[in-house]
Length: 146
Image 1 (cartoon, rainbow, N blue to C red):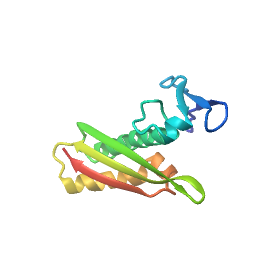
Image 2 (tube, helix red, strand yellow; image 1 turned 30 degrees about the vertical axis):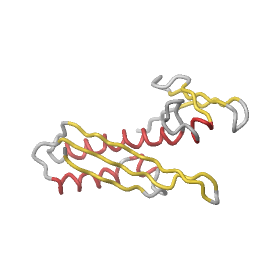
Image 3 (cartoon, helix red, strand yellow; image 1 turned 180 degrees about the horizontal axis):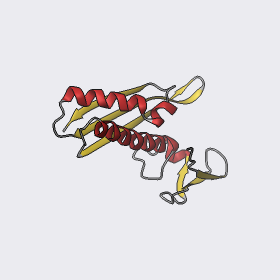
Image 4 (tube, rainbow, N blue to C red; image 1 turned 90 degrees about the horizontal axis):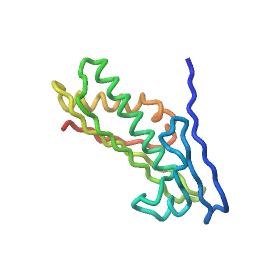
C-alpha cells in the first residue's frame, strides 16, 4: 500500500539573487517564499523558509508520531511529546552539506520512567521513516520526561 506526497518548487532568476516559492499538495504551504538570502543569511528565519528548515520540520513531525505510536503500542499513551529537530549544515570541500541532525524530545507520559522513555525514544529515532531516509547523516538524540 504505497502512497505519494508532492511539493512543488518554482525558482525564478539566478542562484544568488533569484527567488522561489514552495507549495505543498495539502495546501499547508502555498507559494511560501525562499531564496539564497533566506537560506544563508537570515539567521532568524523570518524572511521565509529554506530546505533545511523543512527537513527539520519533517523529521520532528515524523519522529514525534513514531514515538507516540511506539509508546502507545507498549501501553504508555503519551499526553504530549515535544520534538525539536535541529539540522546543521556546513560548507565542506564537496559544497554545502547537512552534517548532522539533533533530535531533542520532551515527553509527558504517565507511569513511565526516564530509562524506558529513553529506550522508546531511541527506537523511534531508528524506526521513523524520515530518520531512515536520512541515514547517511549522523542523528543524535536527547530525551527527557517533563
